[in-house]
Length: 258
Image 1 (cartoon, rainbow, N blue to C red):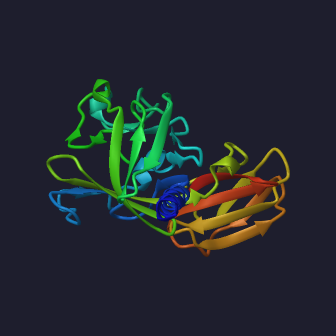
Image 2: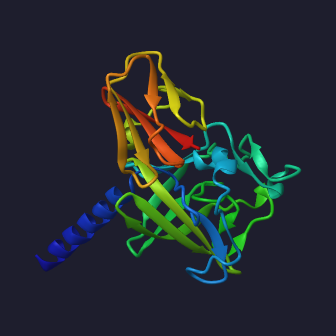
Image 3: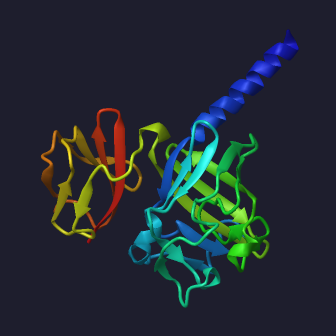
């Protein structure tokens, strides 16, 4: 009986941990969402600081942890590329294989404060960062990466040792159920915006929600028109998450307010 009880507790713990991480994450709009330094908590070498807007093509990348153990990098057609990926200078561009989400991948919570992504080129945070190294070519892509993490509500923090120091990633969960998420349910413009945002959809939506980067709801519009104008003049400058809902599906976009 004791062995059966122990097995049940272990299985329950593993299932709970698995459910904890499930969801869709993007990088948080914070000064240290991308940071690197010689030791844990030391970001003296570099941090993103005020450059989030310049890398908007990267900050809308989705890291998707499925409830069935599948993992996906969804870069929505454009991401931040670096020279080691074959471009002349660091810039936004079409994702480069195998770090483009084209290979099947899985994830597992190891139950020790780490999770492992398995699949050639699959990654969380920066594609070049693997265990014990920063790769110098797409051909050096890892088949598996283990990430030490902490999860506080919807805030996922990762500190990974790349040999010479630690890369630090801060992410926020923008959807808890992967099965609900669909692409292109609506369009928004202008982006960045200052006072108004136009929401355009091909069919009637049930709801539009705007959250700040911590996930706090700052605006809700019920049954919006298919061409709907949102007044965002009272929102502070920064990055926001715009979420549409229709029936049991949602779609998510990032919005920068200046």
